[in-house]
Length: 164
Image (tube, rainbow, N blue to C red; front, side, top):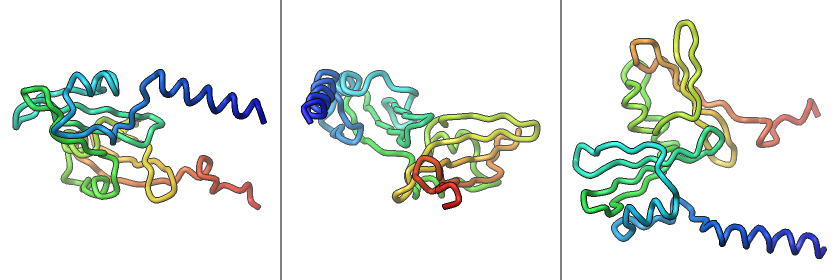
């Protein structure tokens, strides 16, 4: 019992020392860009926002199930914080219409990219309901989405009982 207690205390201490912060705990309109970097580190992707300021993405793939986007204004203040890998956003990808740039705008960069002779597949880990899975968008070499699919990860979520 003493070992378990010591282990838990050690984990809590490590978390406190490393400044663990949940991306969802970032408060828009009060957090500065410098505070965001101090709490979450450098963004995975940073680009100009057409409306002014910058868009910062924090991609927690390939195995993470979250991608957070922060809009930072010209004054260096975080104006919005959005989790991109939501059911609502996943279903906005329309085969035959949505481009690669449109998918990045909706979901951020993928955790994995697989290239095949006739298409490219982008993959994100997602958490939908109680299960984790893979969300895949297939693109033709013309840059248009050809199809989408969601596959549950039965091995992680305990769905595979080995035939029992």
